[in-house]
Image 1 (cartoon, rainbow, N blue to C red):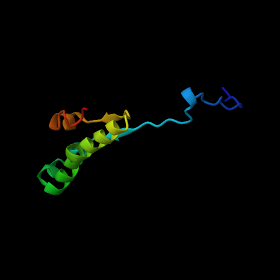
Image 2 (image 1 turned 45 degrees about the vertical axis):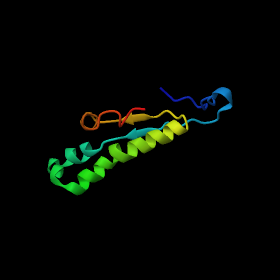
Image 3 (image 1 turned 180 degrees about the horizontal axis):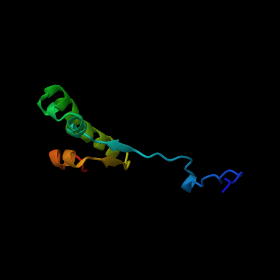
Image 4 (image 1 turned 180 degrees about the vertical axis):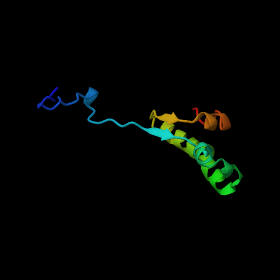
Length: 91
């Protein structure tokens, strides 16, 4: 079936808005490193590096989002959610 030659109609934005954004965060923590090489569990440098996100990064991101009343989505592997349960993720 041939594609139509006319462009799509412009998007009608509500209440005078002219753009939208989607904020998403991937919080893999140690899951990404351990999936690639399970022996990384014995290496302090990558493990502490990957723990920064849930321990320091997420609370800072949540505070920033709350301060500006912005909603966002976090994608969290099951292992990371189990290792770092709420309140690290919720507000």
